[in-house]
Length: 386
Ligand SMILES: [Zn+2]
Image (cartoon, rainbow, N blue to C red; front, side):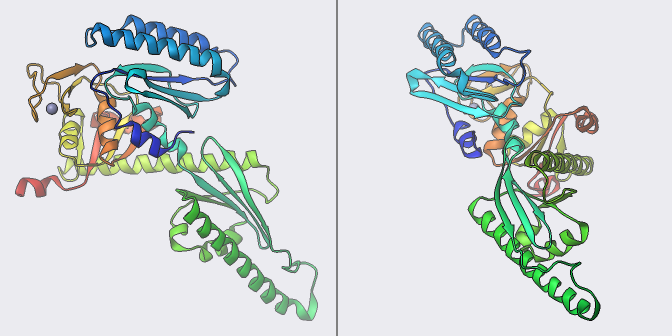
């Protein structure tokens, strides 16, 4: 499966001489009503038909040869893939990469002098790892996964905690103290395990599962940097099967992401209105991008807008109509019917946090803010004063 590091590297992949094909294909074999080979054939044919005068005849020949190579590759090895796949190809420039993607990728093909990585950036949140820990007074199960994949790493049983119901009478109070002490040691051991895991395989979220009072006592034992990742609690028994654990964990993550997006939009609304650390709308977002100012980019993932990209320095520019030259380097501009993918890629390269609004409920509050906007690294009012 593709990683964030792969996407970072691919986002810098350019070739001045040879066009790079970026193909994204959903090969979701769980959907028997769809045959991806037909979709692939149509995409390849469309790409060959659409080769425009940006490319000279030598470059067009190279692209056609790579389209054939891609067709042959899927004929021979397509059965290896079960979700989504990306192929980045410019054989003459020594570029040929195949990456497995989550199934959520949209099938498309783009041919340009740089790799088209926006669809991969868009699915990175699917790849963020999380840990789910089911906890009781004497055992724990630790799972590691992503929205797409999930596995149990460890089962911990500290069985010598005495049963709570086996004793009564005069020893009751002493037993309860003993149980508490034992449970506390067990919680401590599991908490240490989660810290150790975090150091080896960092994870973004922690989901806990168990009775409320147990989870509350366990949270006390977590190291602060693990505790701050606690995204929610699932109501599951220790015996729950792994699919249930995964499904309920994903629901917590989705809710967490929804809340994060809603919070960011609310903050953007306040900051943009006060003209402080936020901008709304395509033009102001492009200005902020050019100044390397974007801390968090918030974008409706169905939004498209025209603009231009400098063919020399790659900077994104507003659509101003008359201007044919880059405002930074004087290089030739290429007008695009959709500049949003380029904005997403540049913001990603600048290390911005990216939030994609993917459902009608998430998109709705962003409508009046122009469907794209950014929280900024520095206050706009400080800059005007400086
Ligand atoms: Zn330029």
